[in-house]
Amino acid sequence: MAIDKDVLDQLLAGRDPRELFASGGLLDELKKALSERRNRRNGTSKKTVLTGSSQVTLDIPRDRAGTFDPKLIAKYQRRFPDFDDKIISMYARGMSVREIRGHLEDLYGIEVSPDLISTVTDAVMDAVTEWQGWPLDTCYPLVFFDAIRVKIRDEGFVRNKAIYMAPGILPDGTKDIPGLWIEQTEGAKFWLRVMNELKHRGVGDILITVVDGLKGFPEAIAPCWRRVWDNVVPFFACPEAVRKIIYTTNSIEAMNSKLRRAVRARGHFPNDEAAMKLLYLVLNHRKLPATDALLNTSGLVQL
Image 1 (tube, rainbow, N blue to C red):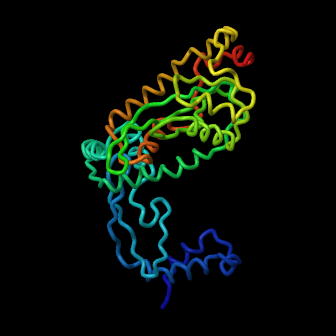
Image 2 (image 1 turned 120 degrees about the vertical axis):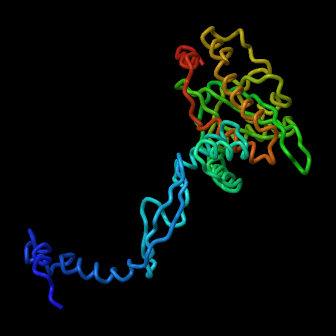
Image 3 (image 1 turned 180 degrees about the horizontal axis):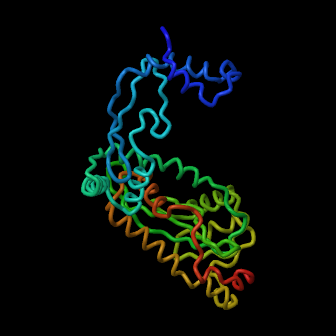
């Protein structure tokens, strides 16, 4: 079969004849195109992909050899990453699965299943597990130990459990949350376990701990850190700059308020993991911006 002269002229235009037979040259390109031509001519299939603002129907080329490998939307992928981010953001604001479904349908006309929402949010647990074992700084000048009460289903009953938090201040003035712990009852054994966990994660010293009536906490400190102040912190013996850091708890209260608002919107949780997942998402990340009081460098130096 003769090849049209105009077609040849277009193929050879601007090319060095010596490159036609070289590796990767025009001849190799023609061979590849001809060998794949039969494979590509097999029609298309429809695929619906959820995006952050709507759902999009794509035409996916069929190929008999099964070698088609899309780059933007991978095989079997049904959602853009930003769609998952929207679900997680709504979940972190305390919205229930039903509320998230209704919100997506009202705004974007998208119907999603409860299983899809659970799958997206459950993926966060890997990040939670990693965060719970994250290496910590060696020294915390100040750590507040506090708790909020949540309702969690346990062995068929909804029980009141405490989620304990430890927002602390680092030497550079930034705020850090070393961890969250869920426990139905508190006592010296529980706090001893928490203290040992912090030590295993790298904490060598906590200069001042601030607590409010946590049972068993004073007994738990002594076995873990040898240099321990008296059970009642001699608050008024501290310099004024240090006292300001301790009593200025606006950022701590703001964090607690944010957590309580999310918990209140959910009512109760099916298990401990669900509660931990929500609070982790509310906190969003370990490092939090410092407030003006925390940036009181003179107080930190005196600590």
